[in-house]
Image (cartoon, rainbow, N blue to C red):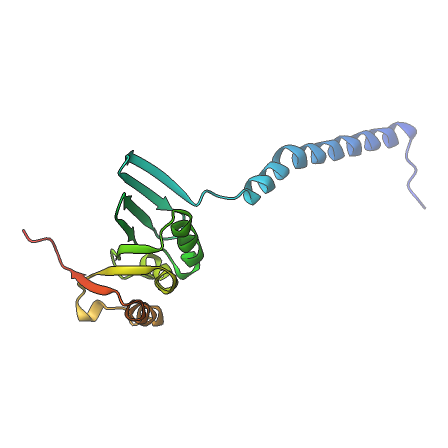
Length: 168
């Protein structure tokens, strides 16, 4: 036999249901929608600091890892380039700054989140010098991406300059 509800209990359940529905709508309007809008907003490509008319430093958003552009009126150096997935961001930012040639690409250390984005960058941007850290043979990466980096440097025609520890 079906349960019979009194009119009072039915109205209470209906009122609670309406309140829950209103709370859900408010949650969507005030919490979920702003999160979605924030997620879809384009993130800044870089944070740029102008220290004078002749010195600009840009921290390029490459996700994991890092990439920094140091630019003067006549020189431009890129320090690291993030992971391979950051290649497009790095190239896009360099081109947005009118850079078609770098005086140097400095790789601080041989982890992919610092050099792999440079592989594609070297295919599109002329680079005079690539600065690599002098690394003991046993610590040189065996990853395919490191071989790709060396190939890209060679094809770019860049000079390779090995950096060793600062002399005391």
